[in-house]
Image 1 (tube, rainbow, N blue to C red):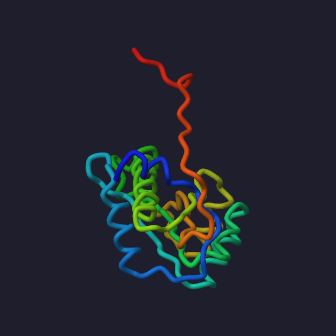
Image 2: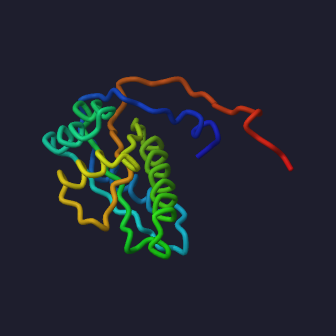
Image 3: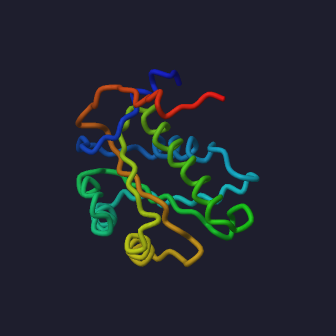
Length: 168
């Protein structure tokens, strides 16, 4: 992957009406699970949604996730608090977030578009997703991802801002 590939990864909210092969999903999950993790605890747990009813149910839980109603694929990125380094929520959130970014890059590298949708720390969203998908209390939904073959292609860009950097 080149720097240009990274700059070309953008949030995509419109998808073609085409299924995503399981091999593509599995490759993206391999990328996700190649992320760094504190003490190699790997607390991430993934739910993969391909059924319309499940995608719509997730959209019901997320006010800004309505693109899930038209996506052929969705993910719920969770963290297992019992697996996190020292049982700490902060480590769990860092590890799962790194895994989510790797998932987005893995999807992009295979020609898919995706968008990251926040769940944590919104208590209502956490409760709704946990209830709808039967998550135990130690499994914390961190975010969701809507994905599919893009029906839109935002232009590559950088958001570099030198004012946000301090060299010491």
